[in-house]
Length: 88
Image 1: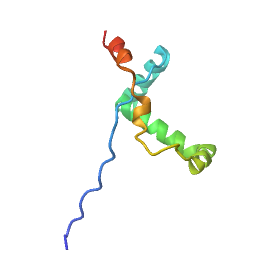
Image 2 (image 1 turned 180 degrees about the vertical axis):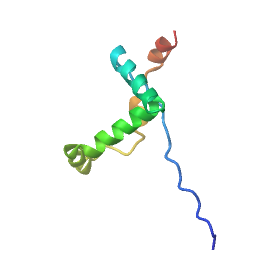
Image 3 (image 1 turned 90 degrees about the vertical axis):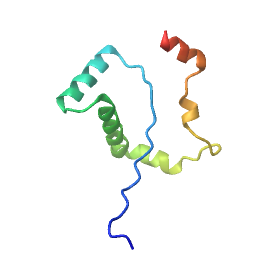
Image 4 (image 1 turned 45 degrees about the vertical axis):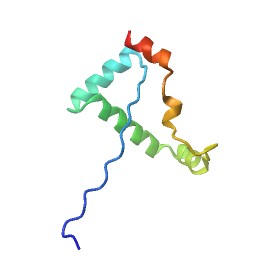
């Protein structure tokens, strides 16, 4: 029997690309600077708090049944042409 426990598995992170107004981006970056974090942390923490506090969303999730079992990240992947336009 091991004396130390294995560390908990870290959640798999994915990349999400969003379009926001210039004002929202400015506030996001300033807030991240204010709390000495990065923008990714601020967005993640804000969404986690939002999802935790929204009782109606909890009800929705409890009754949610996907049409078929699949990787939901496929739905968010932009088309190849959209990726190419973002690179230019």
